[in-house]
Image (cartoon, rainbow, N blue to C red):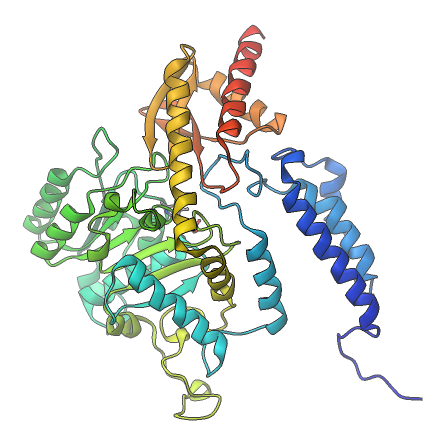
Length: 477
Ligand SMILES: *Cc1c(COP(=O)(O)O)cnc(C)c1O
C-alpha cells in the first residue's frame, strides 16, 4: 500500500472545490446583501468564549471550520463593509479586492525580493503613484501595513538625511538628541510614536497649534523653528497633514514646502486618507504642494477601498530611502541573472524581508475601476459630508462643531458630553449607523467620516434621524 508522505494538500480536490465555491458564493452574498444586516452588533459572551478553545491537536473538517467562521466570526465584524459605518477612517473594501486577495493567497508570493512577476506588479504601482502624486522618476515606494508604519519610515528617512547613514550603526547619540521635528497639534498619534520608535523620542516632535480651520499655524511653526535654532537645537523635519483624523483639515502644504526649502528641512506628509483626494479633479487643488514633499505616507485601504491592509510610503530621493534600510547579507546576495536577480529588492527599502502581495489587490482595484471612478467615489464622500453639514445646520437640536472638511463632520446633540457619549453607543447598538467620537474645543463630538463607497445620502439621513430620535429618548431617561 502506498504510504502517504505528510503534506497539506487535500486528499480529495473535488470536495475541496465544492467547499471553496460555496465559501465564495457566501462571501459574495454577504457583500451584496450587506445592507440587510446591522452595521455592528455586540459579541455575545458565549460566542466570545468559543475563541478560548483548547489547542487543535487533531484535524477538523474544513466544512466545520468554515461553519464556525460563518456563525461566530462573520456576524460580529466591525462593520466597515456596511454603508452605515461612519466612524474612525475605515475603507469599505470591494468584491474585486476580495477576489484579488484570494489570487494572492494562491500564488503565495513573497515580495521581499528576487526576480518574479509579482515584484513587477508592485513596481507598476510605484510608477503609477509617482505619476498620480507628481513625484519624480528618482522616487521610490513600497507597500507596508498602514500609514502608521509608512509615517515611521518617513521619519527614519528624515533621520538619515539629518545624521547620515552612520546613525544606523552608531545610534542617534549626542547629535540625535538635538534633532527637533514639527507637526500640527492635530497630527495623528503615529507621528510621536514614530519619533519614539526612531530613538529620537516623542518629546522631540513639537506640536504646533492649528488655526480655526484646523490647519497648522505657519507663523507659529516658523517661530518654533527659530526658537529651537536659537536654543542650539537642530530642526530637521516638518510633518504636514493632508487630512487630519479628527476634522479632515489639510495643512497649507505649499507654505510648508516653501518653509522646508528655505530652512533645509525634510518635508514629510501624512496623507493617510486625504492624499487620495488627488484622484478627484475637483478636490485635487486642496492638495497643492503635496507634489513637493520629500516623503509621503498614505493608505490604499482607506479611501481607495483596497481590502486591509495596504499602506504605502513614497520617498522623493530613492538613494536616501535605500541608505536608510539596505542591509547586505550573504544569504540575500543578488545576482545579475537567475532567481536572485531583480535588484534592488523591496526589502532594501523597509524593515520587512518577507512581504505579502498587497500590490495585487491594489492593481486589480485601480485597473478594474479606473482612476476616474475612484475619484468620483472620493468626491461623493465629500458630498455626503456637505449634506450632513446642511442637515445639522437645519436642526436646532444639533450643534455643528466642525463643518465638512473633505469627508469629515463633527457635531453634537444638545450640550452635554455624557449625553453625546451615551447617544453614540446607543446609535451603534441600533445597527443603523456607527459614527465615532472625538473632542473638539473641549466638547465631546459625534464624528462622522465618510469613507465607504457604499454610503448614500439616505444613509446620512437615517443616521441623523436616529440621532434625533435617540436624543429625545435618552434625555427623557
Ligand atoms: C488612519 C490614519 C493614520 C494611521 O494609518 P493606519 O493605516 O491606520 O496605520 C495616520 N494618520 C492619519 C491622518 C490617519 O487617518
